Image (cartoon, rainbow, N blue to C red; front, side):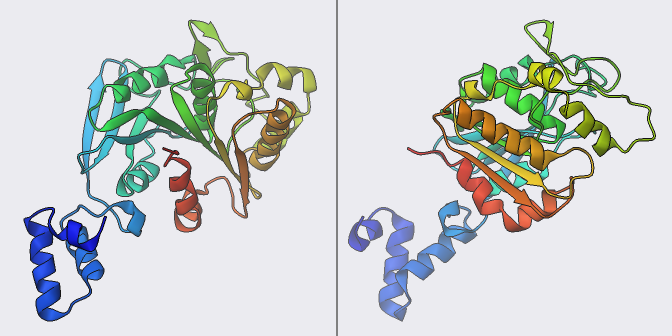
Length: 299
């Protein structure tokens, strides 16, 4: 689009052109300033966009929806927190500020949901995908999921069972399904329990070591290993080298190796950070552009 064409598009740009001619102001700089102040600047310029937040509670769909201001349907990402049961809002705020619809989804510890991380239906996420695909602000061909810690398990399970999910991020992720908080299984799909790897909950052995011992049991690990090859899009893994909860770096390496053997047709990237399990602030500071780029999708 030429400068002349841009200036003729509407009254706002016409006034900008008048100002630039009268006061010899750089047109692009002035245009960017006006668009930013009015909330219309796209994230391509590295500035934050305005967004609205909506609380959703429809039967078992419990979430906060972050919708950037704008008229064009855009990508959407479901954000899954960890074993605390709290909503993860940090990543949703980041995504929305960069023009991506984000849904912080609760999958347990709420009314009409399991009260503990036990027998949580994968359909909880699939229901959220249904909701987003019908939302006017969402491009239904650009749905992603981001899972943190135990939320990564649900992210991988949902993405491998729902082809509408076409981009996945696992943060301090697991390569396997682990046991529930109380019972033997954390997840179900179509009413059947997802087989899980387990270890003793009451032990003086540090949690990390118990997880490493369980992962060394090859037969049990293979049965609980996710079907990553069924994921219908690129995969970004962000692990922590100093992880004190479970060996997220090692499990990420397992995922990459597994997908290489299965000739996975999408890109797989593993970034290992020098941090512990609670890596969110480090990611928001140092990897936010990489995170946003993963969910921009290719037109």
